[in-house]
Length: 369
Image 1 (cartoon, rainbow, N blue to C red):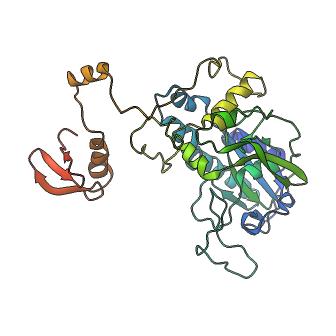
Image 2 (image 1 turned 180 degrees about the vertical axis):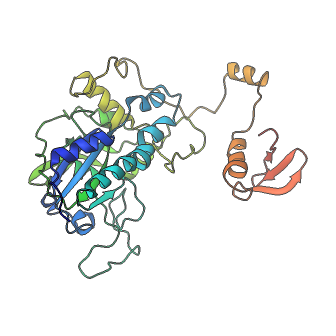
Image 3 (image 1 turned 90 degrees about the vertical axis):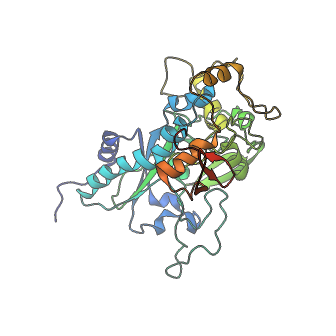
């Protein structure tokens, strides 16, 4: 079949933004030369000539509830999981179809994980997980680093925190990647400087995961790239509010959003402190009418040395109104009535006066809970 014309980079970028991407960068596959075999996308699509990276802004308002300490579901959903699992794929589908209609194959890589042969947190190889299907091929699944892809597509630079910064949104971006056999004009590697090494990311990280002075340097497409040495597991603790839970006001595990059980801290250092600093210094092209925060206002923190208590105001209002209940009641209700079975909730099917008893010996009353 003959096709009327070849797609250009301008065509692809216009289509990507028409379908909903905020940013689009393009690189050629040669830029992946030197990548470890387990991280090399050329093994995913050997016939690919180009890769496309789409960027989706994290709404600044998705961080507001955590900034104020009053709503913690919006960032894990609208600023995190829903971008990766809902919006990103919804934009990739029509872009794939558009390019297929012009005769090109496109491999969409969703920003999700689970099957990789390399641990996505520590970078360690998962021994005993998978076998290569042929000699010389990597163990499935290959893990493509999306931030490195964004760098190789000329979309920005790594900040000291290792979070990727774009000149438009700073750290407020998530990415997806597409591999294609379309030969597209690549964007130049970004030569500007967004990160000024203020180290606000270090100072405000609840997990104390980022080194103040030690750095990691690698070479990407002939360019030296540097970021602060990162303790990945400390970062995981930081996402949950830090090892001391000073940035986590909840007494038990927060409900997972789209399967994501993290981001309680709301990226306190690597995103919120960084973003606020870059906005204050007018380093970003996307601006707002009002500041994100008052720099004189201290960050809230939870003092875990104090016992849990509710204020007299809350006690009086709910005792004289809707009432009080144990915090486990809603969890048990969701597990049994909304989503699962009594067994999943640890609830006995043997009735007791006033309801059922779960494995912990707590009464579950479906009429009240």
